[in-house]
Amino acid sequence: QVQLVESGGGLVQPGGSLRLSCVASGNIFRIYYMAWHRQAPGKERELVAAIFSGDRTDYLDSVKGRFTISRDNAKNTVYLQMNNLQPEDTAVYYCSVDLDSTGAGPGTYWGQGTQVTVSS
Image (tube, rainbow, N blue to C red; front, side):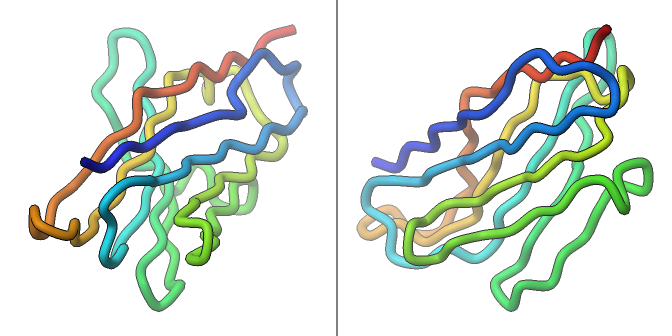
């Protein structure tokens, strides 16, 4: 079994910062790709940021320069540092991880989501 646990969401004023964390645990052999997605009310889920096994990163255009994705391979953890948050960043944020699980093979796993609300 593999589990992803997210933390770090909350309420912040416009211009503020939050740091999201997502820890993967369980029967993990190798992690390839880690990403953050978000879903606002009434909207489809969108990819916000991704980091590949060679540490190459990719970002949604609207968050470039404000958000930074990083990973700690020793801790099986992916982070999303979010600066200069704006009301349009309000959403439930989900992490996803592509990995090889011992005994189960490759797959994509999702966290339960963490709410980020940007409001004055």
